[in-house]
Every structure is written in C-alpha cells, then in structure tokens.
Amino acid sequence: MKSIIYSRVAEKELLSLPLRDQAAIEGALETYAMTGRGDIKPLVGELGFRMRVGSYRVIFDEDQVTILAFQIGRRTTTTYRRN
Image 1 (cartoon, one colour):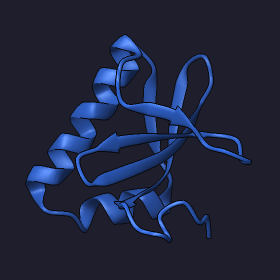
Image 2 (cartoon, rainbow, N blue to C red):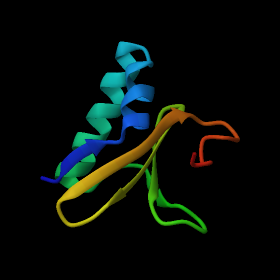
Image 3 (tube, helix red, strand yellow):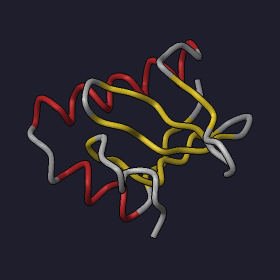
C-alpha cells in the first residue's frame, strides 16, 4: 500500500468540506493506494493525475511508494489551475 500525503493546501481544502465528502475522498484515495483502482486520468500538459470522487476532484502525483495530493475541490473551471 502506498502512503498518502496531503499538501498544506489540499489538507486545508479537505478539512473545509462536509464530513461525508471528506470520508468519500479519503476512502477513494485509500482504495487507489491499495488496489490502483479509481476514476483516474493523467493531466494534459502537466505532470500528475486527477481523481474524480463525485463532484470533487483530487489533483495528485505519485511515485512507487507515495501519493501526494496537491489540491482538492469541486469541479469548476479553476479546479485544475495550480497556485
């Protein structure tokens, strides 16, 4: 199983969500870390991936042992813009 690390921005965004949505996102990331399954697509023109969890998106990158979540938010036109 890969370890999951949240950036400060991603952690703040996650904690601002309703508890049910937080649990869904954490569960989806844990499932992906254990099995490699999930609604994942590579980002176009950038390094990294996006995971779709309902109406939320998790922008992350990974290596052999770690998943690093950069950003978590609702799907909007600014979701994929990195700060």
